[in-house]
Length: 416
Image (cartoon, rainbow, N blue to C red):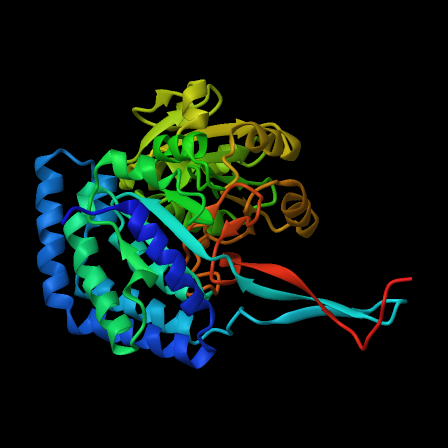
């Protein structure tokens, strides 16, 4: 029997009503069952993942994609732990806030409610299958998960764990749909099903996100590329700056919260850049440097305008010397992607001005860009990092997958 995305979406809409009415303990038990199934089925998940990795290498996937694709026993345990962390969080659904008594006598407030059916379209990240499912279920939503062909075997193995947990709780299996058909036509049809699907979240390369944003009939939350900057201020602690540069650029290059551009104040550049050059050389990092910084680096390439826009996702970085704080801000405003920006400075007024002025989903002072992650920011996991402002901005946890409705309580009041 062939797969029908229209039928799957219709079934998900039906299942969403059931999920929306689950109590907090019921949802938490479901998530605990998913976590247990993941650990119990680690061996079969790894067999499936090994198939995907082998095929990825045969098909020439780059190192960043392979890094995102690969699982091991430790990472599966980490995914399971994230599910349990989500289960342990406060349930966002049903919370009532800002109750006010109006002059008419009625009481008005807002209650958090599920969005309904959420569709995820993503590439080569099997962990997203579980993170997205867990967050959507916690928020009382059904979810349709359309992963890329490069992670199909892994996603289907993970789907079996979710199916087992739903069956154990006697819940509609359509509450979580992992699309088994990676044909582009299925994705194209999915984007037209606005009567069944309430929101689409694309997560992957810039091309995928632009395609979905431009072709979807359904509201889209965008997760564009992460061109993350580290600005080393004139009042920076150089040891801290070097540690943040090393962690942000070299710990894991193929992720959206890794550093792509280093901005250095001209007053500190003569002292700091030789140390930065030695550090980056140690990690065999290709440097694209401006004319005022290139002399500090052996084998550096002259930076072009394309380098300031670049998300390398590799052991590469762009370096620019700026004349002052304002020029650093102006560079970020022009070339940043709204993802994550970092300042290193011991000047409190500068860090506070940076936090206020930089228009980005996550702004940090004296901390690594690698903390720009739902798990690290207390969300348990994330369904994505929104770089658009409606209706969420930054890493999205369970609460970001809800909306609000007005509730009114009265005692027979009528409008005069």
